[in-house]
Image 1 (cartoon, protein in one colour):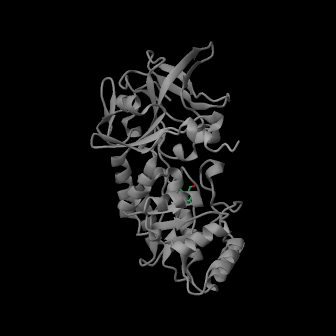
Image 2 (cartoon, protein in one colour):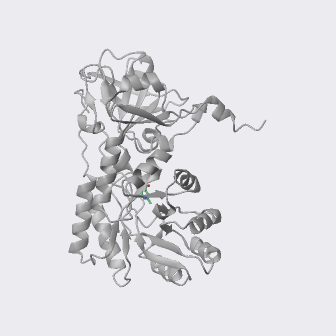
Image 3 (cartoon, helix red, strand yellow):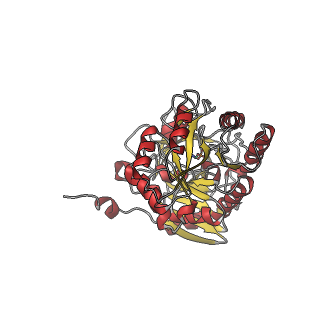
Length: 424
Ligand SMILES: Cc1ncc(COP(=O)(O)O)c(C=O)c1O
């Protein structure tokens, strides 16, 4: 941590830092805060498009955007328009993607506990892939798939790899609720069972070892296990899942999607994988994190003997990651982006929890005070998508900016929206 200026690499690609404002996509952040209110999620379309195109270039057709990282209709359309499929993990995500007009043939359906309804819907609309996760799911598919129907599947396996990341987002190890263990023989039994169901087209295997991974060695180990496991299978696809990390704070650096893809390809070639086998992936965070930022207004500043608390008009309801994973963020004063940041503060939200911390150790200019707009950059992933209504706080609006124009893609939730669920 330091008190220097915010590293520009943490801002969206199109950002222009001015003396007393920051432009993203050619649009003033101060003006966005004024026009749309705060808290506000702002996404730079140029960054989104660039990351999507990078993923489409380095992986084979079928590479999917992991919509759990950030989903709205506009995002789903953008992913598909730039060559990706969209991966969904629940009926709710599937519904948004279908309402956006995405062709079911570009949808990958996940879930460790899919309901009959979810499986039936996937069969009926004819999705690109259903990623099978349990023996109970295989039983459901056997029951639900009619003889004249077909279902394209991958089998999710646990390769037994401990990715170097937070335990809550580690998923490739044996002790996991996801997928079938290779070492116990369950993965092989699942493949045999699926191959015995008429209409099931089993294209290959899928694994996802975790999230926010900086060290690509984990992906190399994963590939080694998958290639060895499927040696005799004549599958046409290996999906390595998502998980590529991103830099959130000064001093962190992560491989680009391009570097990740190149490493995957060269590892696969070295391990002798037939070049006709499609190598696919499901990046989420690496596509949306740096494209997005959150704007808040400072409401109170409390100077205590041991620290200064800066309270903003959002908090753990729009970004639960610091509370869930202890994640770090940077912050800057939008009207003083070039000012030195010598003042160490804790940025907190407006929720009734002491743990409602957005940035535990933030650095702000001396002058930042009540009424100023501050921004936390790199909040495009798992912020809005994990947002809640805790303390009955309505969810923020989301705008996309590009070429000097802002478009509202998700309106701010209202008190009426919240009250609409009341029955009496
Ligand atoms: C199956 C699967 N694929 C892809 C992803 C996306 O991961 P990330 O956003 O870290 O790229 C996840 C995240 O949890 C996942 O569970």
